[in-house]
Image (cartoon, rainbow, N blue to C red; front, side):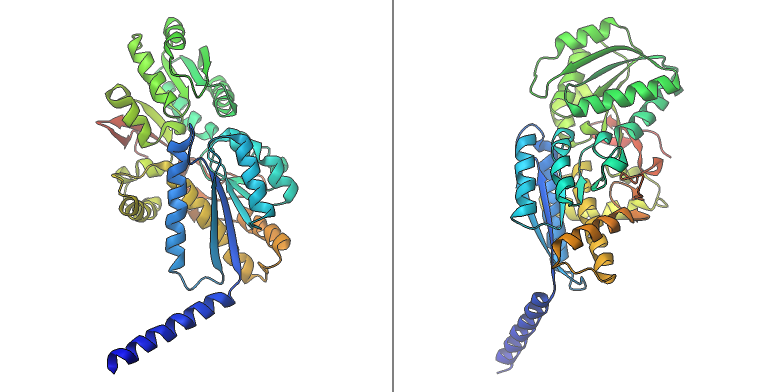
Amino acid sequence: MRVVAIAAACAALMLSATAFAADKPELRIGSVVAMTGPASALGLPEKNALELLQEQIAADTSLPFTVKFITYDDASDPTKAVNNVRKLITEDNAHVVICCTTTPTSMAILETVTQAKVPNISLALGQSVIEPAKDRYWIFKTPSTDQLQVAALVDDMVKRGIKQVAFLGLEDSFGEGGWVALQAVAKAKGVDIVAAERFARTDTNFTPQALKVRQSNPGAVYIHAIPPSSALVHQALKRVGYTGPIYHSGGSANNAFISIGKKDVDGALLGTTPVLVYTDLPDSNPLKPVITKFASLYEKRFNVPKVDIFPGQSWDAGNIVIEAAKAAVKSGTKLDNVDAARAALRDKIEGTKEFVGVGGIFNYSPTDHLGLDQRSTFISIVKNDEFRLYDAK
């Protein structure tokens, strides 16, 4: 009889919890990431982190709303990204969109989310996604920018006495962002660009570009691409006999870069966010406990040896949205009124202050939709198949 009574009590509790949840409004977070295609090495971890966040939130009964996550694959294709974002907005009635993995796809959806007046948080590195802020009213991002990371890398070149650098980058909007950033930063810091070579994401032979770069005799090379091409370009430089330092953008800061490049990429220097080097940070750094908790959850859930930067970007985006929704509901926003809720969420996202995430400490404002500063920018070096902190701050 006692067993029956306990079972009945548990059933009543579950029914009560279900009824309680049914009474809450629903927050719908739509996302489009590259689960397949050339950028899937970045997009799949982003999708995984959103799944993990959904699982964690499901156990949180303190939220004043339930959360529904809707995620689609854009196959690394800008046209598919636009179509899926439209679906999220018009069919799924998403309050917020998290999109997209790459700069080209993030640029492609700008007009769609702007016209629909839906807040969007991009997961792309390109600074052009959020600037100028007056024209990107509905757009925010969580990854660091080309400009921040390139500045840190060129500072290191200057410390080494390097006066000339060569550029190798993708010939799309992501590569263009890196090229624009390098030109501006190098000029400001007195470093000359002696060669610039471009390539497509689908290219596999980089020997011609590597030979031209070597012939320009640079003191350093900066590569602005993502795996697999970034790792293959690095290997091509080594094959043609280039022996100087090779720097990479944050687009290469994931485990695919090392697994493809193997020992050839040992010594590579990358601009990155703290998640890649958090174990080397001092315990006093406020980012360390946040990243340590996230890494433990992610590595256990997905059985990976070490988390990289990309899942942290979508994890931060999702958490920033939830914090904004909590603030909006507290101030009287009704999630059932979707258009008004979208506008209120945008304002609350822009009001985010000192949010300690996995990718850094966020302070958005009307003129800054990145919200990160040098506290969130680091250089990592590949050592013995691991990303380690290059220059402790």
